[in-house]
Length: 451
Image (cartoon, rainbow, N blue to C red):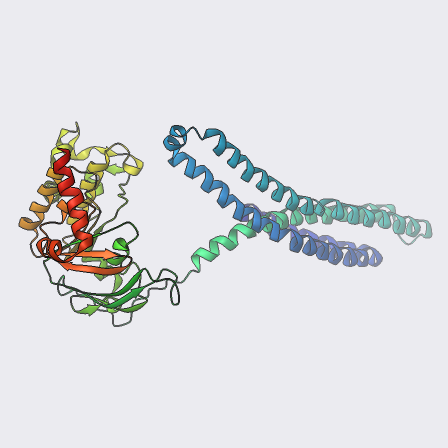
């Protein structure tokens, strides 16, 4: 809209002003007529804009719903097919589409008044000019050539006004989009670095001191409730709990993906809110539940951890993450191209590549958020063995659903409904914690009986 409007808006005002000045030199009554008509048209356009603008805002909001529906169905196309829900999803799409059509039609009906109002006004002005000019010619105060000139200037003004109104309508529609873009650009991050922010993380020790957290902020429902923990640097810590027990929420406090609602989280003895965000997150490597790979080669994906890493360093961390074996089976090895979303590798392969990427950062704290769920137990054990032997000084936090993944951890944290239900080694928790004992027996003993 703005690319098209710049040229038109630069030319049209000059045409209007200069044509009006020339009209003034020929006939004052005609020039006064334009001074009445142009403000009238401006007021009408302003009224139309105010009436239509809220409708366009609503249209673009509904476009979000429409786009989300399409994106959801593209991403989940196999699920839609598996449950034979094509007809339902198509009808849902048509429902949203019809609503967008109705909103747009309502807005365009208001905008459509612009052209007829403008043309009616301006051609009425031309008729009045002909009447005035005709009388002046009969009275001998105006020549036919002068009347012709005034009409030509009137048509120039009409043409320029049509260009202005065309641009005006385009900008009015574009403004709804502009508001949304500006809203994003003007968003102020809640997390701001202090002027004297700490830029060096001493070690990988972690302390939770009476931590409360709510996604809704102050007064919201607490996801974490009075969490007190001390984790020494270099320890391996397992975190286990049922669905919705806030395991992921707990570890996201460490790299300050969220700020605590109450209490404090310390890394290396310093409150995470006092750190420079980049410095803190550089020392905390996190492999999330949802593994994400990017378009590009395996080398390029792993180097997200360190863009200056050598090929040997990339291969080393892939060996630690037990990814080296399957990578070398690809015809192009480490130069194999990953398609968008990593859809040309399996879930277990994707997890191992993401672990390798995290290890390349050489972090003081490594967080695995259920990141080995798609690998077999043997590979899981080899990854943990590599962690123990190769990165003993890195603090390792492992969220897992399988007891075998955390059984040999220095300490295991049992979470239940956002609270710590137990802390200790596997042997200690088997004696003292009913939740851990039930999970252990259902997996270990249950698995043995099945076999």
